Length: 315
Image 1 (cartoon, one colour):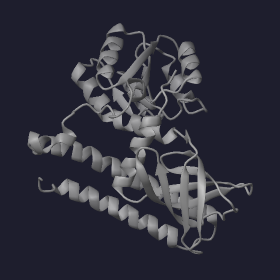
Image 2: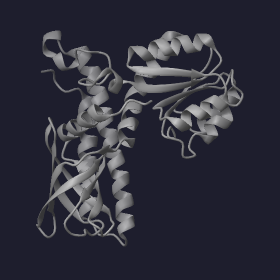
Image 3: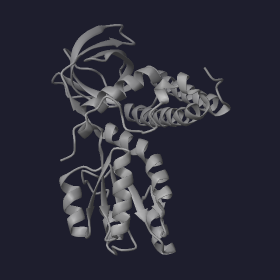
C-alpha cells in the first residue's frame, strides 16, 4: 500500500474533526431543541462534504500512485456507479440551447460517464420538462437563449429539479456575473473545447450523484433496532422510508425531539448499517423522523451504495 499523502491526512483530519463536532452538539446543552437541530444539520453537512472531498482525492491520488496490480478498486476510471442497471446508473441533464455544436459535444461527453442529456430550444419547453421530471443537472445557454436569465431565477421555486447542478454558458461579462449571482455552479464561455466540457462534467458528476441520492427517499419496510443513549432502552422498529441522512420509522411509543440513539438497520443484500441518530419529529401516532449519522466512512459507503441501487430512472 502507498504511504498516505499529506492531502489525504489533512482531509482525514477534517473528517475526524467534523465527527467530534457532531458528537459535541449531540451531547451539548442548548436553549431550544430547534437550535440544537439546526446546528447539528450544519455540522453534518460539513461532515458530508469532508467525506466527498476525501473520496474524490483518494480516487485521483491512488490512480496515479498505485501500481496496476494493487489498484483493482480504482481500475475503472469512469465515475459511473457500479452494481447498477444501465437505467439506474444514468443521471439526467437538461440542456436549454439552440447551438447544435454545444448539444452534440455535451450529449456525447455526458454519455461517456453515464449522464443522459436531453435538449430543448426555448424556455417554455424547458419549464414543461423541468416541472414534470427531475433532472440532476441543467445547462442554460445565456448566449443563444435570452430567457435563460429568467429560467435561472425560477429554478428554485419548487420544481422537481430545483436542487439540480446548474451549468451556465455565458460569454458576456454581464451574463457571467448574473449567472453566478443567481446560483450557477459551473460557468463556461465560448469558445468551448471538448476537453473543457469533459473536465467540467467530471468535476460535476459526484455533485450531481450526491444531490440525486440526497433528495431520494426509498420507501422500504426494514427492521431497525433503536438503542437510546439516555434511557438505555431498546426498541425493535421498522422503517417507512430511508434517505442518505435520515429515515422515517414506526415506533411502539412516542419519541421526544432531540432524543439520541444508536441505530442498527438491516439493509437487504448489504448487511447491517450502524449509525447514530437524533429525533427530528414525532407525530404521536407511532411515526417519527430520525436524522442519521453513519458510524464512519465504511458505513456511509454501505448506505450510499444501497441507495444508489434503488434510485429509479427519471421518466
